[in-house]
Every structure is written in structure tokens, then in C-alpha cells.
Image (cartoon, rainbow, N blue to C red; front, side, top):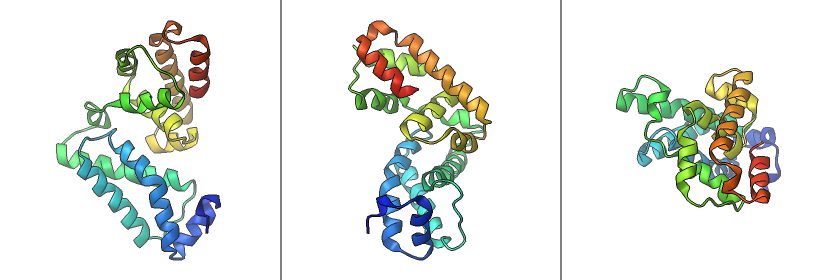
Length: 199
């Protein structure tokens, strides 16, 4: 069966009925993205892997009781985010989500946006400077919207922020990036492509 052709509700129904191959498909489709997202919170690769494994074990064991109201991807990111924050908090005694981000390397993720669109800067220093200038929640909102393709509604629920605030976070973040990554850093054609992709 070609699972990628199924709607999420159809795919989930197979999992709920105990279809191991459908479950494997979900794991293979999303585990890599969850792993990357884990680096937004900690550099401990084993912890990230453990949390991913725990999330999928819980899903399989609770498949008959779970009802996915939105997308499977949203459910996975939501469960993973909640668990990784809990585990990192317990391990490091951090008090807020902002504390989790102090050693995050966002440059890698934002560099992917450029590379996927065949955009290169004279140096990655400008990109690093542009990203460093963004508040933490702007970084996460942009990451979830443009690298993970979540909807504004999903990001709002995931981050616990109202939808208008999500729009505002992303708009201000893009505006800040544009201010630092000035048009002189790109050819006109490439700049238009970059901004089109972000919006």
C-alpha cells in the first residue's frame, strides 16, 4: 500500500487498527524532523532519541484511545515538544522555555532555507548575525512555519500563543531578517526568490 497517498485520518485509522506498516511509515516520515526540532531545545542527541522513541511507543500503546484532531505531524510535534521540554527541564533545572534556547544553533536550520532555494551569502556571518538578532519565539515560529510547514493555527496551539501574535512574531522576524540581509547581499532575482519563499 502507498501510505503517502492517504489522508492523515485514513492513515491514522490503519494505525488504530494495528497496522504496523502504517505506523512504521509515520515514524519514517516524521522522526528526522522531530530529531532536528529537538536540537532547538538541547544538544543531547541521546535525550532527543529517547524522547522520540517514548513518543512513538506511547502512540502505539495508546493507538486505540488516541484521536488525532489535526494532522499527524502536528500531534507528533506537540507531544514531542511537551516531552522534550519536561525532560530538559528535569535534567537542567531550567525555569522557562527561553532558558532552553541559549545554546541552540538556529543557523543550521535557517541555512537550509537558503540552500534549498540555491541562495548563498558571501559569508554565513551575516546569516548568524541576522538570526541572533531575532527573539527566541520569533525563531521558533519561523522555523515551524517555513521549515516544518505547520499552519498558523497549529503553531499557535503548539507554542501556546494566540494566532494574531503568531502572525506578528513571524512578520517582525522576517522584517528583521530582511533588514540585516540587505538586498546588496543578493542578486535581485535571488532576493525576490528568498522573500517569496519566506512569505
